[in-house]
Length: 284
Image (cartoon, rainbow, N blue to C red; front, side, top):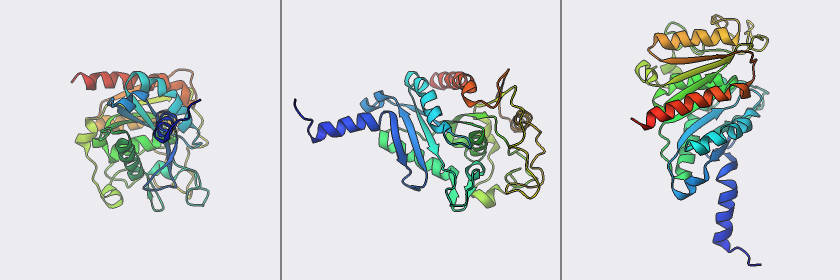
């Protein structure tokens, strides 16, 4: 049996680890943070792809579930899937939720995602200057806040059942509102750019538990107005939709009957929205 040469072994390794369901990569800009992807094998032959960034919830395991759950969609829609992994306890303090609010210690999670996209775009020879983003629960936190901060980078955003929401309120500070964006993030809110982003919001009709989303006074992310958007995730997402719509954003809202806080049960609705948005984008 003939052994593979050096170039043959390298090609086989790329096929196994860099295409299809990839290995887990550390971010070059911050190796504490990781990512895994689904990259349609056709990209190895130079086929151009769009990109979906799918952001996990608090448990982090949904990074793999989303990568696998969107892989067939990616294959048939020429779309790679990048799933960041933001480990719990990344600063050694046991914290679970820092990434949801974009800033944790010395980490700016929005900038890390942009660097991941740039790094993988260069690796695969793709122009991912604009991409779509989906997140559920903690990932829904991340997705709508990323859309507020970087709307010009998105061709679509799908926001699933965030526990807390940032409203487009110029009279309240981050994270409840957006008054101090320039001071915190070095950029103002761009309502015109956000209005150009197709936005989808999805929540289960039976997503009614509040134990994890009610902010107690004195807790880490407590601030005045922390619970004002509503009691349940559905209430808060509807309030977010109204806030976005007041800024000129067109929001497509899905409340999925009979579904609780179950990320995988809403993926069909997300895929339908993304496929429809891709089709409209490609015929322009």
